[in-house]
Image 1 (cartoon, rainbow, N blue to C red):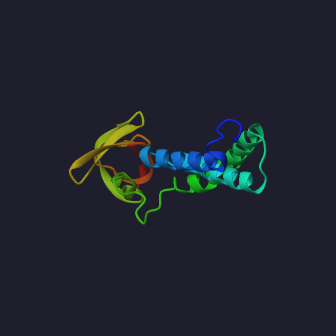
Image 2: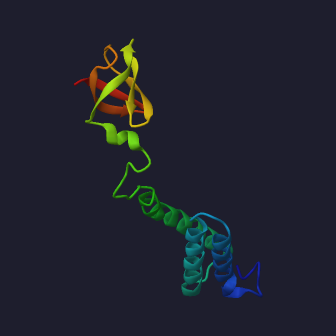
Image 3: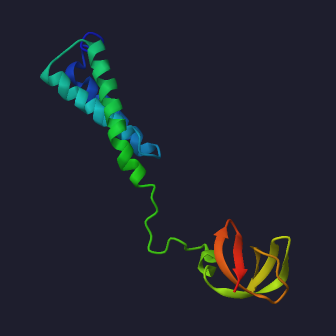
Length: 148
């Protein structure tokens, strides 16, 4: 890079790394930090073995690709929901295994049960109103039931 920016000399990649870190702080996400690390590593490579600017750009591209690949596992691990209550705010999952009485009969596979003050759609075999049913699964916002 000395040929393009002779006044900057070996500081070119350090400046790029600093600008990428500033951009990371200003923009939401977790992407530019890996490019900043690649730019800093390119600066270290330039200090150890000066080379033509085209080679430095190739080193930066290679180090950027390696940093992105290495970060993938770290970033995807943060997507997993870590909770001692994974069904929080999904109260219908708490109904599985409990028994209720049909509010409306199950006709053609569809009916309703009343839980506390709410009415829930249910799916299952045809049964008359008032029949006792056991919730076996949750499918979307519908409960699958069988005769208790």
